[in-house]
Length: 130
Image (cartoon, rainbow, N blue to C red):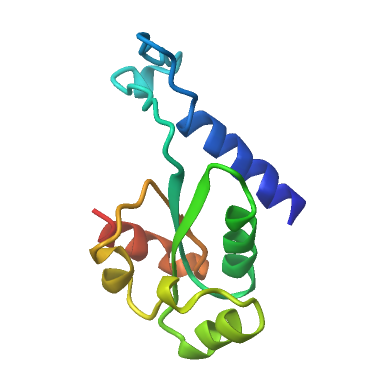
């Protein structure tokens, strides 16, 4: 769980940098694969969705909820039993629990999506995000 929080903090700090007065500096990546990438400067929280409400997904969602500058917008799983555990045991709000990827992302602006499903389904879930 500490490892997940550490990774989340690094992601949050990379995406949500403090805005400077009259100065928006572009991020200059060194990797040739991302030369056209520009850093997003924002003071608003990074909105996070977690796909998969199993043990790992709930751990990621808890870690994201506990980080300043991070707002958990959705926890999604097609297995209603997992959502019940998240609701009852982990005390997640009903408003962020979804049983469909489409419902979870339909009216929510999301900056970051964690896919915490079984390995075989990662590619198909990622394909539906675009």
